[in-house]
Amino acid sequence: KKTQFKIVKDLLMKADTIIIATDSDREGENIAWSIMNQAKINLKSKTIKRLWINSLEKDAILNGFKNLKDAWNYYPAYQEAQTRQISDWLVGMNGSPLYTLRLRQSGVRGVYSIGRVQTPTLYMVYQRDQEIKNFKPEPYFEISAEIEANRQKFVAKLDPYQRFKDEESLTIYM
Image 1 (cartoon, helix red, strand yellow):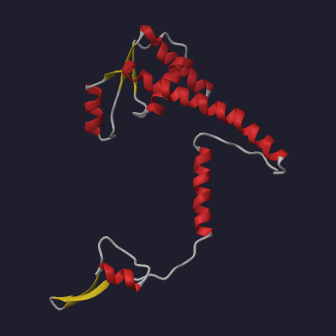
Image 2: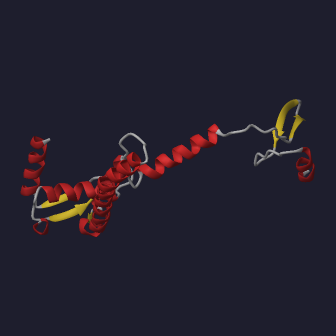
Image 3: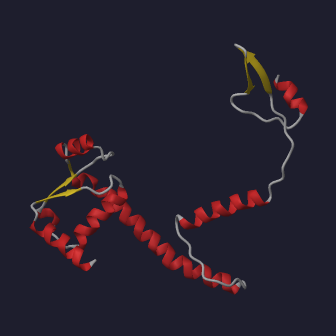
């Protein structure tokens, strides 16, 4: 990693113009600007452009290079990503030990990790698991018709598809 970073840093130092060609989103901006900051180049002494493409088709790439953007217009996206990255780190660094200690005080063993994305995602997985665990099959009714047209038969169903809890609700629908 160090060897590759030194190569990139040296190239950034020598370049008059830098073209950022990472993914066209906040995280792409974060990667590009973080590398330039880590390399400690004088950003104000360089022309920094942004390749903004949403396709890797040859024509899209060529068009993107013909229409390079001012990279400083995308700097706020880097700042947003950095802020989120730091807050994620702070939540995880402080919240994980806190939850681990509090749970241990309640007699729960283990080490627990929390995070802005991880915690709600795991909760969604837990909720879905509970739905599956507590699922109770119930009988239902459907409307279908066997239709013959041009000497061919097929079964037709409601579109959009519907299920009915009892015959009464089925009759009301019809």
